[in-house]
Image 1 (tube, rainbow, N blue to C red):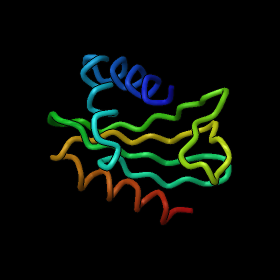
Image 2 (image 1 turned 30 degrees about the vertical axis):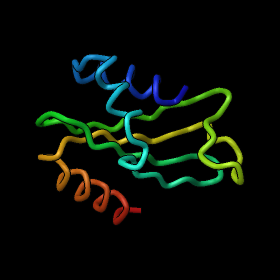
Image 3 (image 1 turned 30 degrees about the horizontal axis):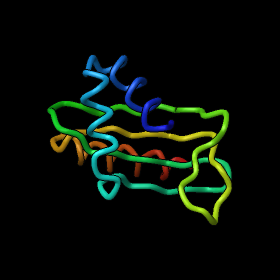
Image 4 (image 1 turned 90 degrees about the vertical axis):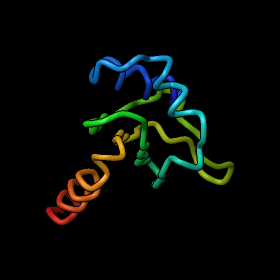
Amino acid sequence: RLSQKIAFAFSERLGLDNNELLKEVTKDDRKAHLMAMPKFAILSYQVKGRDIFDIAVIRTRRGAMFSEDSPPVNLSFVVLFSEDEKNAMFQGTASRIYKL
């Protein structure tokens, strides 16, 4: 599952507990922000903690389904941030979009 890959990737990189992070990511899907394209998706999650901001690219061989109307997505760009880093997340995303 995509949520398990997300939790594993970020727990390793940020030194967070994998099980706690999995609970954070899956507890309330309404808190996740999603932008899905035909080939990839951009997901962002706000989690508990301080000074947390990271981006990971996660690939799923079978693909993740975000709706019944769309094809599976094999590549996800995932942003994980804490409340205190929310501004940094938006500013960082905006600056990268501006460069495109």
